[in-house]
Length: 105
View 1 (cartoon, rainbow, N blue to C red):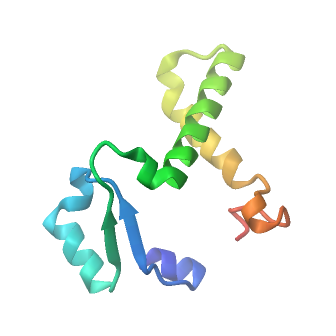
View 2 (view 1 turned 45 degrees about the vertical axis):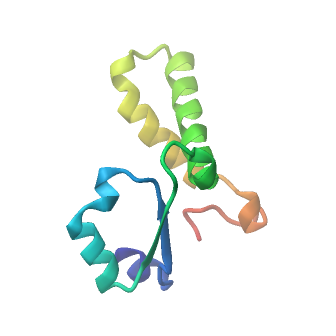
């Protein structure tokens, strides 16, 4: 799979909400073929997936700031989200001892 090819590390478990995109037969087969376990959170409990929820919140806040500070129209939202992700992935992070970015890792 792409993650393993690019990082040399195997995904052991995927934690996700109960979104339809994660519950399809095709996705379940794909996980099984790659030997990836699955952990689903209880509906309407984002607290169980707090790391992902916080990452999403950070990107949304960054995108909103980019739009407001640049006086850009709302239809530029997708570009602002992509830019926020690009910037965040290239910023030092404490989980990597501030020595490298997520992009470098």
